[in-house]
Image (cartoon, helix red, strand yellow):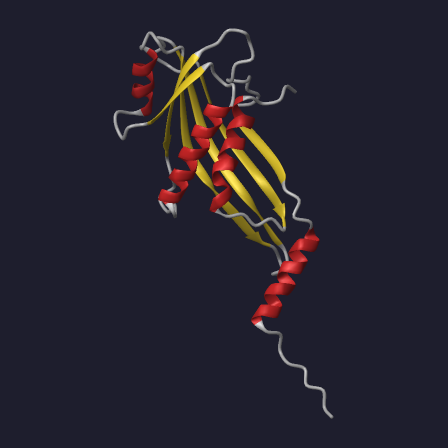
Length: 198
């Protein structure tokens, strides 16, 4: 009786790939790059309590996909961070208008006598990333978040602080989708606005 050795099916290959990915570890690592660096925490650490307005918007790449899903995720993550964190005594979250420029909108808000701080948050990147290595078994994925910040004190016409943050979380065997994006941008905001002291 001859032994027939068939070609592996697509499902077998998929299961094999999944097993290799699981064996690879699936341990996520997180990194944050602030530009310029270092940056002192923008969230309050003193007994003095400030009222803040957060103006947020997006500036996507020209070829950005799934814009609606990403903007919904950004909105939910930003709202949850500022509502649940003790970053400010009270906070009002507003979406940046299409015009005038964000700087003009923030400066106008800073002139409001009831506002101590105006924080502009511009989301430039928010999404899952996936890289294939030299073989199909080598998968490295995760999430990438890129944010621009500008902070205005009361009655200030120009920002007192401005910096960018590039946050990544992932590693070998990690595959993430859009479902984690609200939590990911929340984590990126926490790391960027209240960094651990060096």
